[in-house]
Image (cartoon, rainbow, N blue to C red; front, side):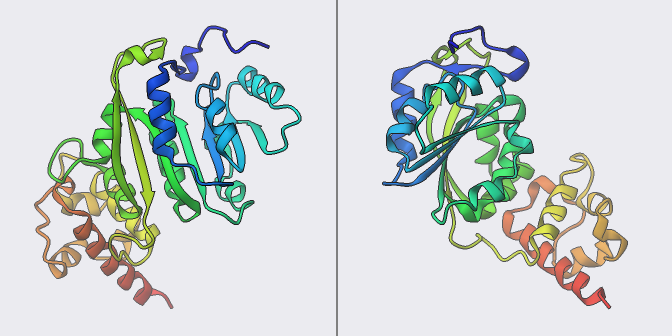
Length: 275
């Protein structure tokens, strides 16, 4: 089949067509010799054409059945290319990435409508990654780099910031895509840390603390934490007092280190409550 059919709006398809931007992404990906590479949403193959020449193993996850068939046909007989015809949100990434002893390089032009969900799934497998080079809606990229106490600062900022150093590569205007989106995009490099930026105790607890703190942005931190599952066991007012954090503050004013402090204390309290 041809990959030149009309992009599907329902899948958020905006195909990258600017050769200069493609070159910048490949350069930023810095693929090492024989490294396994995962491309999420290869589309018509603008990046794939370059990745296939550099990757030790290349895995493509494509939700569009016709495009998955196109890539399977195109790389038929090439044993180092695997095409997975599936929704990336339903793929067991941990199992997939565990197939290689080496750490993976992830490259993707992520559909805007699922980018945050994909980021959370990649966050969960950070220990299997060497680097990620991702194209995102600029608004999402700004959120990831946002400082505390601004409207863009949120759950993704704090969670991704724990395990990744995030660097902007380039802002990409709408005209670099077909069809052109209505907003700017941005390419970011995500470099996994060898150790977390801060000690958080139990990471599930950390996620719970962060998500509850942002659950009602107009409410105080004290009220937000009470909505968390751990609040059934932990006295949130006392928790904030012990951590010397004013419960009248809002979640968006806390630094990653303050979230980590809360998480460590909740972890200690929950472990102490176990029989």
